[in-house]
Every structure is written in structure tokens, then in C-alpha cells.
Image 1 (spheres, helix red, strand yellow):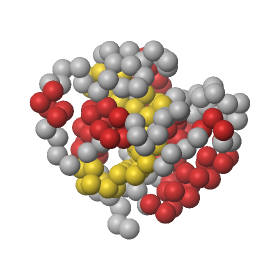
Image 2: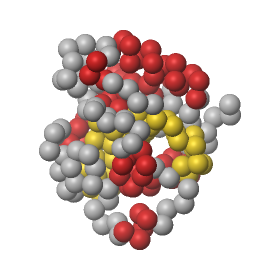
Image 3: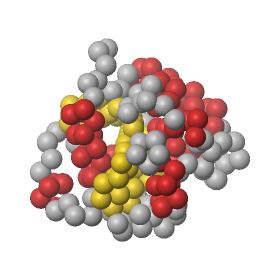
Length: 186
């Protein structure tokens, strides 16, 4: 679909970003929490993150938890990293919510009850963006890029790692979302 390279951004460009207006629900990754640097790097007036113990909760339990949270918070935008990116894609499709994923796990292997993200989960007209740090040491982001770029705008950073070297780059995608898509009235 579209590919952009973030490796040429200067520190001034990423540090001088404005505060975003979208109400954001951030879905953290495996063994992470709302204390993660990814959540804190998002510059938004209204951002939320609920700690979820993915390892000890079944797929069905996590799905129900996120469904309830989305119904209560009514976010304009979902943002997720790693396993949180997996859930972001699932919930985006279920609730027709725009989404941004960062180094998402498309086929989590830490539990047996997690089905892989399939083409049918991605082939729709819901606005979605991906930010991939290609140096991810845990997941093959080149393979993820090949899958996602057929369905959404993909921004890449050459280098980086799974926990994200430049989580502040997510803000550029939030701004792109805000410039191109109006949040739905609540």
C-alpha cells in the first residue's frame, strides 16, 4: 500500500511534536504495562492503558476485557505494541476503530489459544497504520512488513529493537490520523 522510512527524522522533528487530541487507548505488549516507555511517549491529552496479564489470562478472557474497556472508554484510536498490537488489530476490526500498531505480533506463540491474525482480519477499510522498527530481535519485522503493507500504511525505521528505540515516532502516526480522519461523535 504505502511505505515511509523514519530513519531520516531528526531529534528536533520528533521532540517538538504537538499534543494530540484523539482519545487513545494503548494496548501494551507481553510482560509490559502502562509504565512502558511506549505509553509515556504518546503525547495525547486523553490516553488510557489498562494493565493486562496476557500470560495468565485466556484469549477469551482478554478479548472480553478489551471489549468491555472499549465500550466504556469509547476511544477514537487504538494504539498497540507487540501482543498489544495483535489485540489492537483484533479490536480495531471488531469495533471498526482506527488503529496504529508498533512491531505487532501477528501470531503470538506464548499461549496455545491465540489464533494468528489472518488476511480477513486485515482486509477492510478501517484506517490503520503500522510503525515497524526493522531491527526487532524477537519478531521478524521484514515478514510483518510484507504482510501489513498490503492492507495499511507502513512506516519503518531501519534499526531499532522490539521494545522500540524511537517510541516517539508513534506520535507522527497519531498526527497523521488526526489530520486525515475525524473522530466519530460520541
